[in-house]
Length: 175
Image (cartoon, rainbow, N blue to C red; front, side):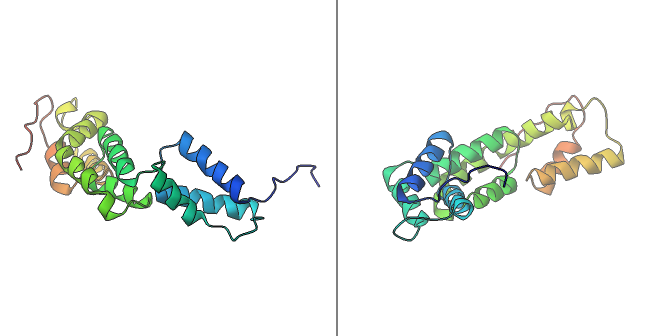
């Protein structure tokens, strides 16, 4: 024995308090809160009189307005777009957070309207296209296109930005 005491198993009030601390500290979605609660129950065990009900607790927090998947989706998609990520990557992040299609409508519209600006920020950060100091050799070009694709931009946008002449501003895409 190492002398380290294990925390007691969770019960209804301890689980609720843990969930409250989590939503107070972090912007989170219902899916992420549910994963957190299930992980804590697995780690510490359950000692409550009734069976554990993390889904019910997450539903209750949604009703009270402590978690809002649609608001989380808009916030998260905006933050990722400001970092230069494209629609595919942002969509993957939202799906991983457990955001359903109905809660993503406003976020998807925001992503579509900011797609060109996100690609511009990504090109600036990676110093390619108009932000490059000189033309890229074929190997560098391939790597730059691959970086754009990993960031969630489509191939046509990636190629357009990477092949842009250094020092010349890019005109926004017409939809």
